Image (cartoon, rainbow, N blue to C red):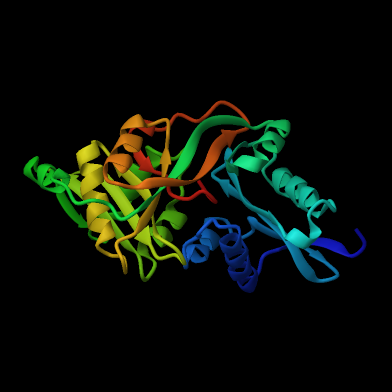
Length: 286
């Protein structure tokens, strides 16, 4: 491994990582990197051989006790030569002493188990053009108003997100919901936040995440309104199978499974409101 070094990712590297992830078929958001960078500026690592990038990983710190691994990619030409595992160790060392989560693709899950990760649930990507049904009208009749999430106090959004994620991530959430080209919608009933969804453009189907809701009807209302902000109506949502109501909803709207990853942790799964998670925010940063 002569000439191998690990460096922090530059802005150009972040775009390169997005391109690599797209090549793996992961369909990252076009502007995700801008929100990722503010989550933890030092959390993205690139392995280089004689200056040439050959591998990457993200090891993002949240608060003082949680971390998340993502973007673990070695270029096909160098796989099996030990570069990826060296980068893996560097990422895990950065998160030493924390509970660590990741979303593991099927062919890597055995390796993650060997590193101490245990599965909590599967995130199954449902993709397609959602059928229109009466759920939106039913939600509205129940006194739920769907509004621009940016019109609400940000503290309210951050507190709501904290119910579904094991650490605060205010800077990330602010960027994630507010980047140009995205739409963030909230469901409000009598001043209470009862749902949140964000859609973002990708090279493939537009991705929705997070999709939080107190009921399937509210989730459907948000999803259908978000789908209106796509070029062709096609969306993709990473649905935790630990919430069977979410799986039933997406299947009932005509979306079909297209991809799967296991949410895994190095210790007991953190206590979050899985019953209200209809779509996780990101497979790369949790």
